[in-house]
Length: 155
Image (cartoon, rainbow, N blue to C red; front, side):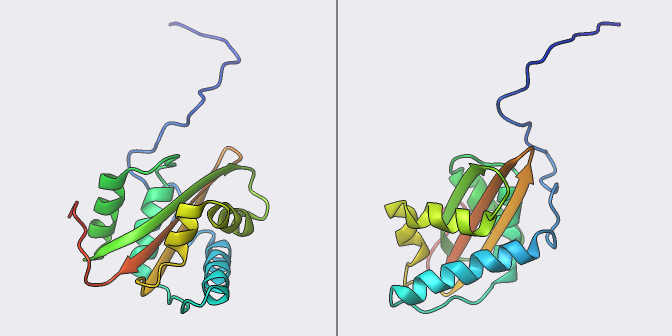
């Protein structure tokens, strides 16, 4: 038997292979608040509010559960297809330390990033799905804005 003792902690968490560490019903209040804040931002920028799409909610949650810290376009697109969404979409990710005020923090991060902001207020979107997972004091959020009649090139 070998016993290793040390204080070293891995810098990145091991991504769960099953992608189900946070259930689809966990954190619903926070997820609903993210949607409310996004729709508030859209309205303030002259763009219509987006209704929730459960398929995109599921696809987004699959991505947050993988603790992505940058875009993995093929995997994100596959998550949408696997969940049953047939079209292309715009997506935002954000990761931050801490869990307090997670909805506001996520939306503020997207507002303060020009590319993410444009995705959030894209007038081509007709529905939305968002997610959130927390692991070891880190919050992972994802937003999918469905774009009908567009193509998911990874499908």
